[in-house]
Amino acid sequence: MKVFDGKGLDMPALLRATSRPDLHAPGESLFWDDPHIAAGMLEAHLDPEVDAASRTPVFVERSAHWLMEHMSLVPGDRVLDLGCGPGLYCERFALGGLEVVGVDLSENSLDHARVSARRRGLEVEYLRGDFREAEFGGKFDAAFCIFGEFAVFSPPEQVRLLGKIRDGLERGGYLALDVPTRAHFEPILGERSWTVSEGGFWSPDPYLLLSSSFDYPDAHRHLHQHVVVAADGTSKIYRIWSGYYTPSSISALIENAGFRVDTIRADIAGSPLEAGSEWLGIIAQRPWG
Image 1 (spheres, helix red, strand yellow):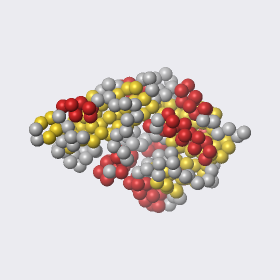
Image 2 (tube, helix red, strand yellow; image 1 turned 90 degrees about the vertical axis):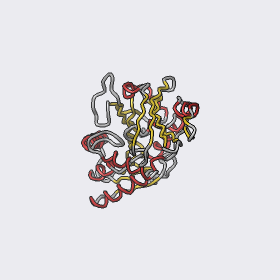
Image 3 (tube, rainbow, N blue to C red; image 1 turned 45 degrees about the horizontal axis):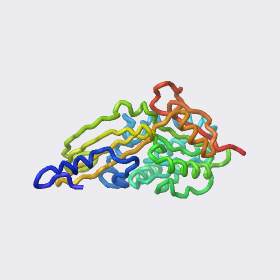
Image 4 (cartoon, rainbow, N blue to C red; image 1 turned 90 degrees about the horizontal axis):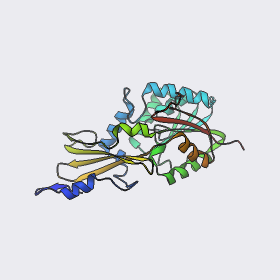
């Protein structure tokens, strides 16, 4: 879409680009495979100071320890990390003696993960693919879908994914995931901003960034929308959808897929759940029967 040209600003086009879209309207697909954006994503994954694309190393260490302890995982158990990114959790699980398979769509992140594992002498199997469709191979004692990864999918996709994970687990196997609550988005709901950059996360070239936060309360969904306008007037729309949940709504979704919810905490490091918690950390189990 072109929002301005040599004749000036195309206001109707700009308004269409920045308006509230229909629920689950797609944006630019696979934007993390853009070489420039992929580099920025990897940098965000590896930033030790902030929870950006990944949790901080301190949190990863604490939560991996709590997860392995709570699930009674022991060396030799086989685990699956869905949306593994550059392998931060995979490496920590491997250090605990677990057999680890990580799945992610970003080749850039997986390249880093493979190099890092070799340097540390760790055996981790990394698979590139959409984990909603990919074949994992064999059965697992536990599966992880961490840092809101599960929440980005539409409800029908979530139902299919939960069924796929359940079928890939041993009986008695565990699933751990974390999802945001509405409190996580409340500080930014309705925000709109614009930024002019000489080059940044979205492009190495100058661009105008128009960002918006949209709430879909009836569907319990949130959208971060970013419209990037290049110097030639063309624009790209990046949409990051996420559901938000209550303990009862996420429990119902998981239990309807054939799991038994074991515990719900404020995060996947075992912090106590409180009113106003921004995250829910859920551990569920495939029944033995």
